Length: 230
Image (cartoon, rainbow, N blue to C red; front, top):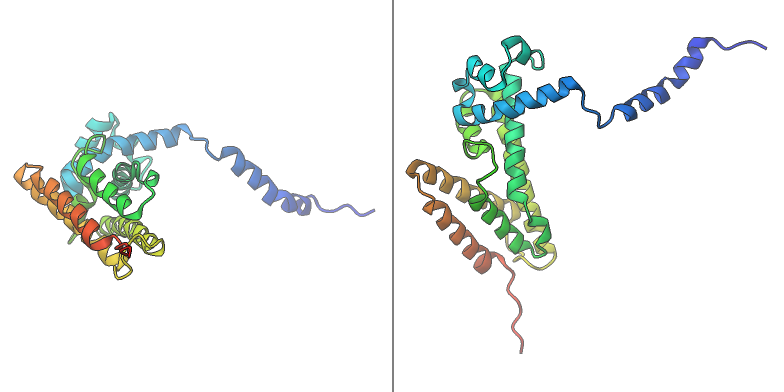
């Protein structure tokens, strides 16, 4: 009986072997990955407060307690670190804005809850304010990679709000004449604009006014009108 070449047998089992290795390591965080995550966590407030251009290598070294080689062993350069720091900051912001939203059954109330979270849930976020606004302003005419990252974040936020609106229309909770994406962009523009004014004036009243106006608009112009009983 002719024996099959070992290489042929090994090649047959390679996909299975690779799958087992992948499954074994899935969810396992190596020491290098832990270090990388810690660098991102400590660098995120710097980039969010000082911006990409304003954050120096010495700032990063002071924050992380690592030398240049220790930092850039895990990243191709400052730009990659900045983009991962933005992703970290944005995820923290999104988590705060979504807190409790899924527990609200009504679509209009879910939109109102997201507005409320944006205004009130400022604690626990990465210092420096909204990472989307900060990054969008700084990267507008500068870093293309960060600008694209901010655009992707904005699109995700817009899609989430417009998705709630579209579902509300389907469930007859939202007026069918409403355009979900336009509504989402108007909500985001109102909140981000109010945040900008609030930060410049160092006064939270513009944010509270924006919430009041948005809640009123959602109730009066977005919520579907119930047919009057005869």
